[in-house]
Image (tube, rainbow, N blue to C red):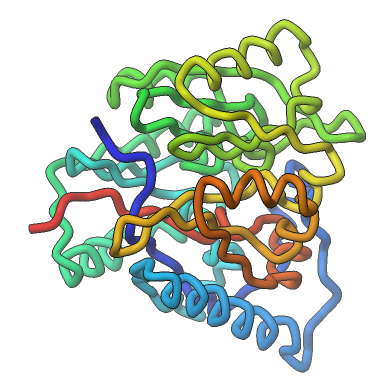
Length: 310
């Protein structure tokens, strides 16, 4: 059985971070930035990135850092989990992405070099990117929230998450799909599944109100509970503060680490935080600039490395 949480993550230190106009239409969490002639935004992002990486390392999580290249400009490079995922059997999956300027983030040569340097073993690569030619997308573990131990793939359909690519993923990696539609408080489709839910080993965070179909909502909760998860329900307001964008990891001692932003930490409130802390140690770091202009949070910044070691 595959472990749910990884002890290592890959992060990409951004070189040309900025609000991406190619993604704003589908990402309601994102705010378009004003021009940044003095580089204040990028300086803030660099500080936020380093603080998060440092907090994870102090908690005992191995952090593998790749430096982005300034050219060509990749405004969302800080979110590598959208273009690849790794799996305990040695599989690497490459994903089709909606925005053309995000596809250049797929630096497979750099990824391979980083994996070799850290002695990870790759047995096979599954390349789903040909779906882009048909306008079909599946943006990694943004679109997919995986229950790795129970082989369940949760996904809310959106302009970035299409049924055809979901089926391809499920067939090739032997996952059962749990699909649904989800909307924010304004009724707009939620762009990525990982902003409304997280699945850990023994808990799941879920904004149940986002799943408008009552029967489907109940079915998702039932599936989570039957697979051994305590469901922590969050509101639309908490989801908007990225309380759903949480990731369970483990440190070198095998202890559970629950990573999130400081905004998410505050949004949970003391009661829900106490429930989460019964499952592991919460590690949080402030990333307000990345959240505001990137429209993603801590989970989006972390690509788990589940591969076996050589």
